Image (tube, rainbow, N blue to C red; front, top):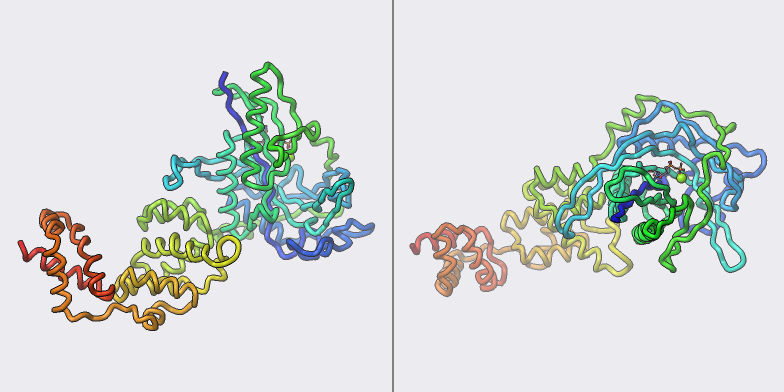
Length: 489
Ligand code: ADP
Ligand code: MG
């Protein structure tokens, strides 16, 4: 029998705020352990939580980006459990009145190749609720260390409907979510810093069936590779159980990245195990409708909407939009350059997706140089492309100018002057003579041109540029070529 998988995700995303959700101490990553704590975080007797409204605002902003409804009132509940990651022995969360209800996320399924757009589909959300993050345990042999720096960081838990059908779709969902939330300024969603983690609920059923079989929940997947491998493993395991005539037990499992397998942690806990009850120390929150609408009007364009706009109105190919749109920093860079020089979006996009990315990667250090540290500003790139389009710089010379601009942060014209790379007004008689020689050496493109292939004369540009050491004005070359080729008829 053929089987198919059904997957629902619970994604935890740390919201960007300066301080914690119920305490005034700051949030941070990579600090000395247990320095971002205070009596509230440590749950000392007599302390009271105070809500950080910015955390609610960020959660609402996230909800609006995800198309959720924002109920006028949300409230806080205690989820009781006993584990050293929370000194209070309960977690503040939202049980039955979450900040966001419903919603949907557009995802792009993997295309047939990296450079070809995949199919798009919507994944429904059940809800998203705000809660406090917990401390981090490091297990070391027969003892464990605990760091409460992370405890109290605002965390949005986004729950999907069981609308995903493979590990690739789950990864596509996480990618879409990361792009939406980073462009909204709601979270950086950096999985390496634990800003985005996910639990995957997985079941398997006969292909084509619409029943939901019993599922397992794999806890705390904290990398894309982990998500992919854990889901694939679990689908194989459950399929094997059914194929052998067995039943899948509803339970919570752990992903063992080293062993490459999931292992049983505990039976699935039910809501009543947590003894949820409304927190007596915190009032429900009323979020005024006007404030919701104000946030809604300030939302950025969603990633796939922007991509469609670039493809449809700016005529950019998927190979460029998939680089520029899928990284909000690059999209903003492109928009700024476009605002300065709107004549040639494709050239701007090309420089950003190719040259800029290449130079960022060539800088010493891990990964790409952060975009904020790139000295070359969008207006400088706009100027460079303008110089090419007006014939002041050849494309060939522009390559050198670009690298120099990237390294020094100087403007395009200044670099071109300093390096003596500006196209020089040529003695047009001499240029014409060169053109004649080049045509005479190879009459085929000229003939093709006269037969209606306008692009054929481009074959002459390279040799002419070579003969002029790249300093001829490309426009002038084209004018002369068109005239000579037509005349030799
Ligand atoms: P709980 O509150 O016990 O964690 P929920 O019913 O809220 O469980 O579901 C949690 C997640 O599990 C959701 O993302 C949901 O889509 C997913 N889910 C529920 N049933 C199934 C199933 N049979 N197969 C796969 N995923 C499921
Ligand atoms: Mg859960």
